[in-house]
Length: 328
Image 1 (cartoon, helix red, strand yellow):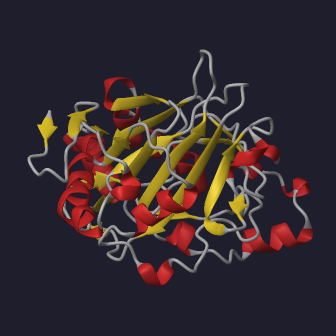
Image 2: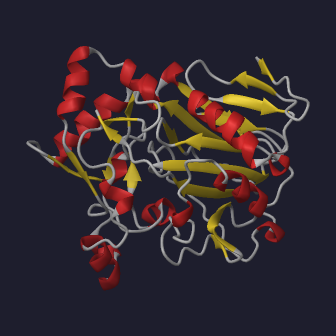
């Protein structure tokens, strides 16, 4: 357990899992200064990959303002919506924050948005080169509770034997919406896209017959290329600050792999990612009201799990960071 010594930084920080995450108690993030973020919380996020701030009674704006003060956030990108254009889940007052939850969640928490309900189940990925936050505004009152999974990309790389590390380094992959669509995962699911049980393969593509002419055009000529092209090439990359090797990918958008069929590429991607996204390598978070989970997408992978049929609502934000992932 880490304890602060400064009178203005009285908190406890306890590791959540051997390889990823720490719980922070005794902090209200709306009261934290930008200097404390630079001195304490940015280094802690790089060290642990994920920070859980418990019992946060904060607004979506306070949640977002805390995130945007991290020193490597690209402030020039804040005016660019990182989500799908016209996404109805984005808050009208704050379009860079989305409402995620069930239709029967508390309407007063929707803030003019239509909450997105993602029933795709397991789907391991990283959101991109940046940091993501989730704030639990409403959770199921009774068991079972909703859960989210996280895993360390560093540990996922370390778990591979030398032969598989070489295969990972040799794998040259290309990503895009060509087998799904340019939309949210919830919409991909509604149009028939499915992942396999471990969340590492696209089991069923979105059929052309389920897309409009405009959707087909966007699939063939995507406008949000940075959502996909950042993953191109080797599945192993280096974190831009720590320089450590990490497995970093989003398998659902795999379009092709050099020198092999798509099916062979999918199989190899699954073999590479499976050890680090299963068993004891995974941190399972059961959500409580007021949980604010902040994670570094550059060193972690995460996955949704099955929706619990009870009212629930979260706010989500993703902020791009300045330095790109580095080649191995």
